Image 1 (cartoon, rainbow, N blue to C red):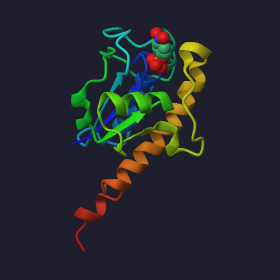
Image 2 (image 1 turned 90 degrees about the vertical axis):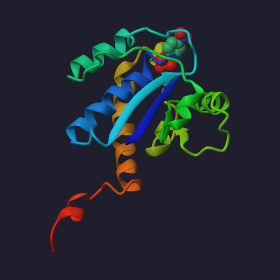
Image 3 (image 1 turned 90 degrees about the horizontal axis):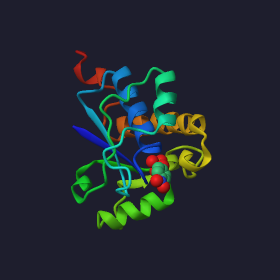
Length: 163
Ligand code: 4NP
């Protein structure tokens, strides 16, 4: 099982948005038995809360489920995840500090996978959940391609096809 963790500050706006989009993409591609997705926040401020109304409304509009999602704080056991995908530079730093994993390349900034190579702006401050959604879709598509390539899952039919 390949495990992906999205990280932001509060775990109510950006990382749940990315988690729900990534899960939806994985379902669409028939990969639910291979890839699991979760999210966490570096702060404890919103632990136990459902995603922010802006995130829930945008995802509902796009027919993507947020059912059962509750904010939690990052913990040291999260270092077990294969990909720890952070929404901005400060999330990368705080995640590396909290997980005592300073040289760990599995902790990286989400949009470094895309041509944007920038932080996902925080809609908690900008109010722009449409921007968050669009950047998360781009990031998730790039992340899924990266995972499929790295884990040798790109052309599964070649493995089973008889010659
Ligand atoms: P998130 O957004 O990190 O994308 O979940 C935030 C949520 C809450 C706060 C800041 C950012 N806050 O300061 O409470």
